[in-house]
Amino acid sequence: MVLPSTQNHLDVKDIEQGVILLKDGSASMVVQVNSLNFDLLSEPEQDGIIGAYSGFLNSLSFYVQVLIISRRTDVSSYLSKVSQAQERQQNQLLKERLGNYKDFVQQLISKNDVLDKCFYIIVPYKSPLTGGSNNNSPLNMLKKSFGIGGQSKELRFDKADLLKRAFIDLEPKRDHVVEQLRRCGLKAEQLNTEQLITLMYELYNQDSAKNQPLQDEAKNYTTPIVEPKIRL
Image 1 (cartoon, rainbow, N blue to C red):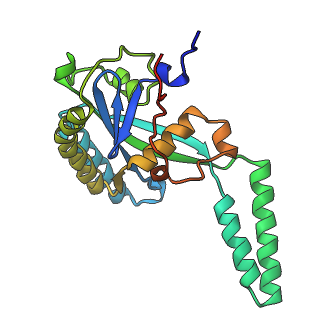
Image 2: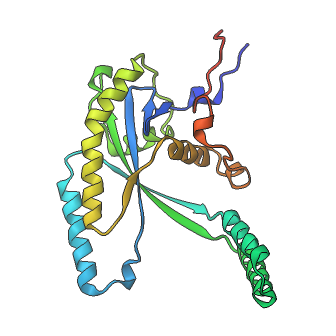
């Protein structure tokens, strides 16, 4: 008896050219958005951003989903840079202070969870060729985008054709979202394949990803989705 792999229970079919392809024939682009400190803005600036964001929402003629993820901040690379700066420092006093600063940061993160919030906007696409439409409920589309809404029926479709159709539908929507958010003073950028793989890995491996982050670049992997050579 061959037990099903974990991937059999996920909706993700593949990730190509910055697009998540799902088993039910739908696809999604993910746009990462930076944040701003609203409280530090003056009242006229706050009113301007509220008006721009209201205009963004009113301009949408398609579904989008807003995803907010809180994750523990990884400062290992930052501490490594501090250590390198400490080794290069010739002034003994500054070298000692860099060491004290590094110890302070290490103690701070060991006693407190330093969290970072990441903001994403998911732009979904549903191919009419698979019997669906773009009028799926926003909640279901959000769950499907990350394969967490329960296992969907896997449909047979041409992956290259789906990718082509998804680009035609999603690229104008992505550009519209990016431009409207720019008017709000926010920088938005579509995640590429490597960034999507890293995001998926962290979502599905929240505990192990803290201690075992992806070390290799995604482009060095043969495929983001593991497939057996022999199918039984």
